[in-house]
Structures are given as structure tokens and as C-alpha cells.
Length: 449
Image (cartoon, rainbow, N blue to C red):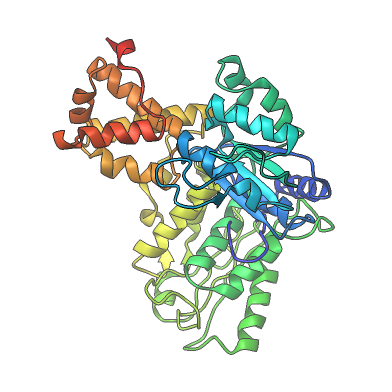
């Protein structure tokens, strides 16, 4: 979903059309916005879309509140002066100062500590910045604040983990991003979009993005016209002279009828690629020719997805939402060994789904359970199975804290036993504890004894 240039909200469902309309309305004001939704549903994309269509489009500064420890987050937001702490060799402006006359996006605001919440509340009330180590207020800024979280802030307020006054400050306009399982008609279009991106088919990607990001004057409930998209792509290739080789073929359908079903032999013969769907499954979209077209990723033979594979992808619950779709399509392109992706090429959890997707709060608990299983049963190391996911923002601080909680329960509060349980060397003890302290994930061991 994230791309160079203007942000596109890909989809043709009623939910995404309503979201686009809300984005257009909200962009006309400078009111604070709270964006909620499950992990991977596209909250930052929505924030960028609001900013890009507003008068503040020149500046958008994003801060991941979950990935920065409290001691550094204050400096990151407000800046610091030279000599204010060890390593502060020069004055540094904060993100709030850098976002002047623009927008600051506070991602995962539910992970912010109570102390940082108090500092943020002070800024929201006065608009003034107090740099770390400074004796006086530096300046007042004109910044629009947007925040996002996949947690229920009202529950956190009841638990004493989030300030109620801050909640009412940031919750001027509330936008909830729907999970992908509630807008299934967008799944095919998203798969086509990411497939075009990862195979290097830029003209197809542009056509799909244009269709998925259409204006509100179009019919909001109509299924995408794949014949129209295919024709547009053919025209693009014809004008650019990019298509070469033995020819090209396009399979398309309207999503409610049948489409031509290409055999694997046709693909091997270089006669083109394409596929469609029938019943409730939309056609897979535009596909390119025999792989010789300019811009196509020469390292991967993958160019399209078979009908049965597309049906399985559309029937899957996608608990990781759009981010999971992107990752799965990229995996298929990178590991694919043939032009047409078959059902057996899909990940096991998609071929044999265990059940419907769960709400984000339940899924966060499941993430910790799955990580604990990998560490204990599969004997994977914490540094290989958990650390990279956290640093790449694929799991949150809450996930790591839940995992540490499970480890301490098993070890009865002994961190040295947790070290062995998580398959780390004894020499990693200090490194492990420093990591937990730095990212506010260390839990009091006495509660488990």
C-alpha cells in the first residue's frame, strides 16, 4: 500500500469507499485525528492520505512510539540541547519542531508510558516545545497531530495505563480502519497490485492503483472491470513498445462469471499469462506476457496466480490484514518456480485455514503464544525468532512483554532460567536484560515467585 508519490487507498468495497470519503472530509480541517484498527490494516496509509490531500501536504513526520524507549522518545519528539545527556554533542531539533506547518503521526500511541503521555498532553495544551536540557520553552509550533493504535484505549484507561485527559485531546476525530476480512471484495485487487509491484510490472500497477483509488463519483459497490484494466495495460504496452517475445495473453473476468482458464502448457509456451475467477471470486486482474517485457523482475518467473490459488487467497481470513497480503505475495514472487502460482505453492496456513480471523486484542495474545512455541518447542533462539520481528515493527512491545511474562511464569521469576528457555547463551544475560530495560519490556521477577 505504501508507494512513491501520492498515497492510494486500494479497494472498491463500500467500506473503503466510505473511508475515502471520510479522508476527504477530514483533510479539510486541522483537527486532531485518532486512527484505530487491527495491526497491518493500513492506519499509517490512512494518515498519509489525509495529509497528502490537506494544506499541510509538504511535511509528514512519523514516530513509532512502540519502537523507541522512553528515555529516547522524549528527545525524539521534543529535541535536546548540547550536553543535556551523555552523547548529546550538539543541539538537535525534535520531530515536533521538524513537523512545523505539517503533520506529525504518532504510531502505536497506546504503547507510550504515562510520563510521556503527560509531556505530550502539555504540548497539546500549549503548543510549546521544552527541549531536553533546555531551561525555557524554545518555540510554539503549528503542527497537526494524528495518532494511531491497534489497542482499545478505553480499556487501557480503565486499567490505569492511559491518561483519560490525553484520550479526549487526541480523539477529536475518530477513524476506524476496517480489517480486510470485512471487505473481502478488495482482496483480489490488492493481490494484483502487489503482484504487479513485485514482478516489476509498473504499468499494470499504475492501472490497478488508479482503479482501486478511484474517485467517489464512481459506483462504490461495482466489482472492478478487469477487461477494462487489461485493455488499459495493453494500450500502455503498445504505446511504450515494451512487450516483446512470442506474444501476450490476458485472462479476465468480471468477478461474477467465468474467465478463460489457461493451462500450464500455455504458460511454458510463452503464449501469455492470465487467469480469472468464477462465482464470488473476482478475476485476478491484468497479467503480463512471457516475461520479456521491460521492467519485469527477471529473477522470478511468477507472473500470475491460478484460479484455485486465487480462491484460497480470497477465502483466507487474513488476520495480518493488508501487510500480510503484501508479505505473502512477495514470498510467492521470490520463491516461485513457475509463471503460474498453483494452490500447492501457497503457505500451509492459507491452504488449510484453521478458522476465522480474531480481533486484534486476541491476536496479540496469540502472537505471544506462537513466539513462545517457537522458542520452547522448536528450540529457536530469541535473537533469531523474536528480536528481528520487534526491531522491524512486525510485533509490538506488548507482544514482547507478553512473551517475557510467559517465560517468567515458566521459570518462576528466574531470568537466568528464562535465558536458557529462550535458547540464549549464558554470556547473553546482560545483553538480554539491557534489551528488556531499553524497550520497557522487563517485568518484576518477584511477582512470579
